[in-house]
Image 1 (cartoon, helix red, strand yellow):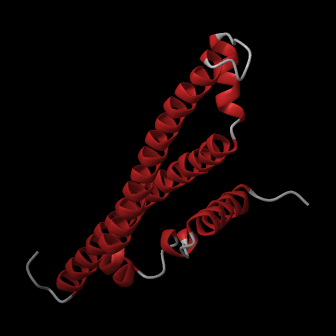
Image 2: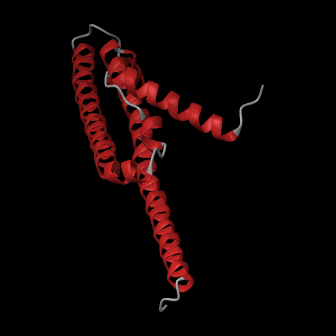
Amino acid sequence: MALSKSKKRIKAIVDATRALTISTGKKFSLYKDVVIHSLDYDLGNITELFAFWAMETERLQSKVGRLELNLERLEAELDIEIRRKIVKGKIPKLTEAGIKHRIRLNKEYSKIEDELLIARRNHRYLLVAKMSMSMKKDVLQSIAANRRKELDDKSLMVKSHKGGDI
């Protein structure tokens, strides 16, 4: 049975949230935060939700930066180590591509590289979450404005029905 577009979107949100929870160890609930529960409740909490998702986005961006730096440092250390071994005759002479290949095969390098890929993916998820909170804010403001207009219109109709001045 094929899923409707909205169910596919919800499933994508749930999957992204699950991936974030697993990789960061924190419990996230993007679906719960994106859904509009009640106007008063959501208008009261949108700032907190936006701040939470924005801070998590920045925290993960910082992690991405740290991992990139760690990867660069490790690459430099491994490059020096490999070149020293070549000079000492412990390993055969290699081309630049050969040196890069040995670096990429290093277990620690691979581990950090995998962590970096996961962190980048999760950062993209959090950017979407932050954007979703901004869109939720816009929808809530629009709903609130429409409700005010409806109340004003009803108020005018009551005044005109009672014979009051308009």
